[in-house]
Amino acid sequence: MKALDALLNRRSSPKLSDPLPPPAVLENIYKSALRAADHAVLRPWRFLVIKGASRERLGDLFVTAATLQDPAITAEKQLSLRQKPLRAPMILITISNPVPHPKVPEFEQDLSAAAAMQNMLLAAYAQGVGAMWRTGAMAYDQTVMRGLGLAAHEKIIGFLYLGTVGGAAKNLNDPPVDTFFKEWHP
Ligand SMILES: Cc1cc2nc3c(=O)[nH]c(=O)nc-3n(C[C@H](O)[C@H](O)[C@H](O)COP(=O)(O)O)c2cc1C
Image 1 (spheres, rainbow, N blue to C red):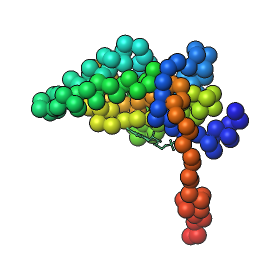
Image 2: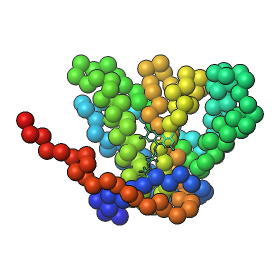
Image 3: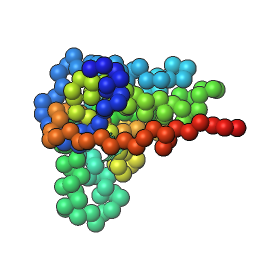
Image 4: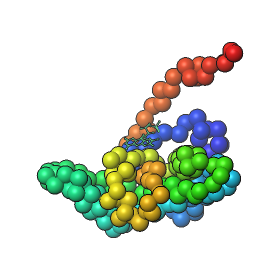
């Protein structure tokens, strides 16, 4: 697929199933993350690959975290959390890992990690792989972050769910560009 076709047509796929993308396709997704715009080339990100039974362990971690937040959590809510990581055969967790720098504030380093996420969404779409960027309360939960081995200065930028597209592709309905792009007249 041409780059512009991917840029103009990328869409998320909430329904994802087996099989996993093949290794060469995944490698392109990984490499695209490393091409994110990155002030001072700090590479202020890292990624966790969650697949197979590790998805179940992640679901367990979500339940542990939510139970600590609310010991009265219902069994229904527990089940829902436990099943969240099973919505795709694979999840990439993008972690912002900012380093102290005199010219590059932490915010910019977080933005670079977000750019890595967007690159991966595009690389997935361009190769026919379904993808969806998700966060939710679990992305910001201290118990989850600790359980995943994040250091105190690190953040979860998102869970990138990846897999084979299920269901029909949704229609795009973007507003006209001039809604958002205005010439500045000083
Ligand atoms: C930082 C971030 C977090 C997101 N978290 C969620 C989420 O937890 N659940 C969700 O349904 N969509 C989430 N989204 C939105 C979807 O990934 C998706 O972009 C949105 O549904 C629009 O669809 P599209 O990508 O096909 O335009 C998030 C997007 C971003 C940028």
